[in-house]
Image (cartoon, rainbow, N blue to C red; front, side, top):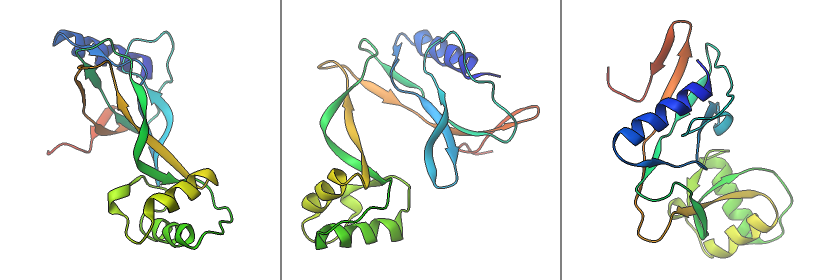
Length: 167
């Protein structure tokens, strides 16, 4: 199966409920300590996708909306992840970086999970230094509702195994 086939199936299912799929958000590959990797898994029909191989692990994330199906980024962010070790002079930023590395490594984390003083200042310093990546809040047209679901799937020789649902 390819990611193009998955995208077509996701779009067909969402349209079957009378909604639009979100074109500019996707599912993704998963790896050890990497929550977002290749390949991308589209929410809409595409011309050519990536053929999935046994052993690959992917997150299928259908995003549906009663709006037009285009998400934009808001200026604020609440989720972050560590991306690169670089020198940082600020003591609050160094302290926060230590907490992040000890507790989350490269996995995404929420601002509200952090402790200490001057968190917003420290996050700002780490972002400016290229040490953290931000995941901005997402929104669609005013008043539009957006939903998202997610399943983790291991590709097998004869299909797949969904790991996020009870057996």
